[in-house]
Length: 283
Image (cartoon, rainbow, N blue to C red; front, side):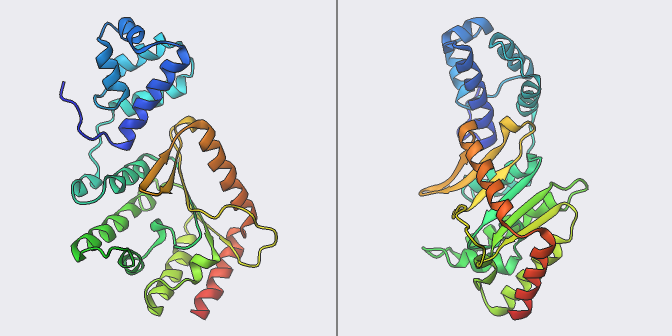
C-alpha cells in the first residue's frame, strides 16, 4: 500500500483516536497487530495517518479494544470511509496545508464558533477587508499569493450558504469592530456585512464592549468546530509557527469553558446588532 506523504488534519485525527483507543485498552501495537492478523508496522502506519483503515478493520479494532462507545465508533467509521475531495483541493500546493485543513474541518463541522479580539472573523469578512488584512502581513505577500488567500477565505463561506448551513456563532470584541482594516469605505462595508449576516437564523453575532465591567475573559483568538460526537470536537489556535489543532479532551474542556465565559459576558444578539449599527453610523 502506498503511504501518504502528508496526511490531512482529519486523517491524523482518525489516527490519533485509534491510538487513544488502543492506549485505553492497555495494548501494545504488536498485541493489536496480532489480534488483527497484520504486522505491527501496519498498525504503526494506521496510527500515524500514513495509511487509511477500512470500516471493517476499524470496527474489529474497536471490538478488540473493548470500546463500548458506539456513537464514537460510528463517527470514526464515517471518517474512515469518507473519500471527500472538496473544493479546497484545488489549492493544494498553492497555499499552506493549514488553510486546506481548516476548510476541510469546517466542511465536516456540526457547528462553528469564533472569538475574535482584533479582526472580524474570517467567515464574516468581505473580500476587500480580507485583502487589506492579508496585505498587512510581514513579509509582504506576492500579489498572486494574496489573491489566492482572499479567494480561499471567501470560498470557506459556503458552509453558511448551503441548503443545510452550519450553525455559526461569533463573539467579537469592540476593538475588532473599531480597528480600521483598509480604508474607511472598507470598514463601513464590513460592518454592514456583519449586520446583514447576523440576521440569518443560523448565524449569531455577539459583541464584547470596551466598557464591560470585570471582564477577565480570554485575550486570544479561539475557533471551535463541532464533531459528529463531542469527543471529536476540534479547537484551533494560533501557534508561534503556524496553526495548531487541539483535540485532547482536557484542552477541549478548557476551550469550551473559555467560550462559555466569553459568551456569557457578551451582549445578547439583539443588543449586539444595535451596538454594531451605532458603530456603522459613526464610521
